[in-house]
Image 1: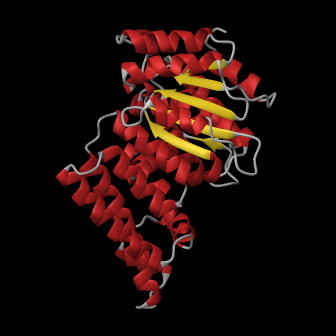
Image 2: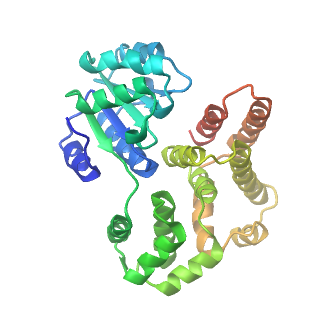
Amino acid sequence: MNILKMHDFNKLISLQKISSVYLLAGEESYFINMCLNKIEKFTATDDLNRDVFYASESSADDILNALQTLPFLSEIRVVIVKGVNKMKAIDAERLTDYLSNTIETSCLILLYFDNYKKETVAKRREFINKCIASKNCVSVNCRKQYENEVKEFIKNEFAQKGKEVSYDVISRIIEENGNDLLNISNEIEKLSLFAGKNKKDITQEDLEKISGYTKETGIYALSSEIEARDLKKTMFVLEKLLNEREEPVIILSAISSVVRKMLNAKSMIEEQGLSTAEIASALRIHDFYAETFFTNLKKYSTDTLKESLKTILKTDTAIKTGSNDAASALEKTILSICK
């Protein structure tokens, strides 16, 4: 089987027929995670039947053992391997045999966060090529988008939210965000929220107003998803930041900042009896976002936020002493906060 384009994958997954193996490969992590979410949605697996491995830390034996484990009260077990582009050559060689001897009750999902065509490690390149050629594997090319494709993406995303947008606004969004679909997606979400339900057209004026409040960045997106307690989206943003080589201590600082802000807000409500307007003013939360912030705040208890700060402190020590892998430590921290 040849490697699929995104629209071909969308057609295939709509048939709700699950493949034994998936290879999601390319530099556009937004599409990789979108594909992953769609596969997981159709497999409908719970945490008991879902294993996640980091290729740089896990061996082929770990992955194969998980694949050979029967699902519990479910038809299928999902095994996700992240960062296949960092997999050891010996493990890539071991997993190659699995492609022709897949297990019916397991679904292996391989995430390769790079341009697979530029793979330089021979065994890893051989493994990727065999995945693409295998009849048991669905491979998807999640490449970066060209400018004309990004324009179409923006137009379609707004349309799905019931909004219309001019060419000038689309060009301005691309000018500020490049072809970074995560940032663009967040900008679209923010503009749609700002415009409200009754306003159909997104204008240059809307864009200029919203740009004056916040400059969307990966760190800002991370904070927003933590506030919303959306585990999948938060993990997605974290993965993107790490792939872009953002410093782990900066990421952890952002996590700490948003948790402290929510804890301060809880304290102002429960101990000081302040109104939402008073709290928004004290914490410098802009009017257009205040309603969303206080809605999200209800998703957390004070005790949960206090425990989250303790976890953050332990993670800070682990990262600074090197006792744990930074990526793994950050993922576990977010899991403990957003679960």
